[in-house]
Length: 220
Image: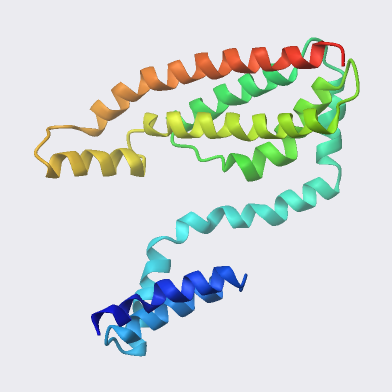
């Protein structure tokens, strides 16, 4: 009968398989698991509520979505495209490198950009497309490549530079975990060894972004 507590996993699998509402499926799975474990409904709801309150900061970026929709509807994307079109010698790769530098620097100061939502889709991607299409129109394949490269640049910058901030959750978690295992590792040590990683990432990704521009300068 102990296996009945795994009913939540079955509910999640079936819910996703039938493409049901994700939030409803997760909540139903949590309720079923709690009740199958012998908890009262009040206890289960208390645990769910506490988990939400403890992690509510994670969902704050949702507040930016209406703002981004409003500014896009008022021509923010087109204004960015027009501005890039007037700047000479600015390529998609250079835009990606500038954004990569901004991403790593802001990570070092603990500033969360939520890059994919707030910058990549409404700004960086259309700016890169405008810069790449100055000499000749882009094909659908090239547009998809720019979209993918813009998203990848944000991921590289965020992933390899997120440990540059000494008070970030990842740094504190690693430091506390290593200390619990008997290793004398401080958050400052983790940040110190993360600096070369961020620098190497910028060099490699920056070089790749420069190489990325060459395919837009060649004849179709």
